[in-house]
Length: 494
Ligand code: MN
Image (cartoon, rainbow, N blue to C red; front, top):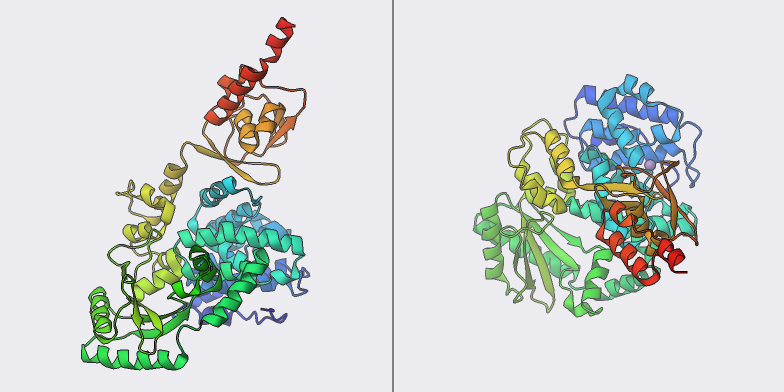
């Protein structure tokens, strides 16, 4: 997986990924390339290559997703504000407010860090989306991360492990929530060997031993299916196969106690047909030709997966003793399964009437929320409301290290301290918000950085109960006072 140090950074590579790109859009991307190249002049990556290669690769990743040109331009310039002397004003002057806002969004997200504490993970995922003024910022960040994780071999071992774990827990999960199956798989497989080296080796070995169906047999099935589908007048747009990616194979093997005979979809045939009724018709044809494995048929068209995934799945006995999973879907379902939310934000889709229901289907945990958004017409407004409604009544604050803590609105440094650790709560002596000393009943605001001063001699006071907003903190304070009595009571009874 060594990345060649030489990278072809000709903008033509990006244009080639965007069919019918307009001249003025080419010019924009070209200007972004030149701007970023100049700004990063002289900076090197750990691998020794020019820093510009990294941001160009991010642009390529975005172009593969067919994102709109503003997003691609912002992706190419995503590290300019953070890592070079170029100012927001200079970028705004050159590229306007819109693109600069996207870059600022990415810069903001760059400051977050993942500590590995399980209970903070979901907060961090939410925070990611809440802090991004536009979901496209998240997509840029994911494409940025993809290149970083694919070039992780140049980074120190401790950093490798942290970045890879963060990628699995945050970025890959987010990509999944946003329905971006392809990006999710790439992130997971790149991170897997760094986070779980032993399991990675083991899974690789098992994978090689599995060989569920020979290439020859696969080819036979394909030829037979093509012939039969023609007879039944089902047009095939495409037929190909995918090999299950390693990380998801490992996840599945773990569920089956590493029993490889339980996994039927190491290789899956994918048939793309024009319409939904063609999907069902193709299924009928397939089941007429090959005996289906009982209990293996799944209709994700009638009942999509929570992240919006749609397809028909069936497993057949292919005739030589092996089984084969077949997935049937329309081109639209295929694009969505691979690119998820990006397929709704693409170059071609933007500007058209945003299809609320479709975006709704694609966004996982934001789904329930979207049901309240019945009359929102435009995508932009939709994202704005999505954020404010979903995150209403929550504030996201940071530890000095950048860990995200998710608290109810109205929380104080006391809540923060107890959420981090009960010991910290019990010995809180003071608090700093954004570097400034504040009273303990200060109401915390989004993005505040909180530092708690801890003293062994400091203990919970009764008045803290009223200052605290979370039941967690209130409970700890009460318990402490019950067990130890408050300091004042101790003095009086002495
Ligand atoms: Mn970057």
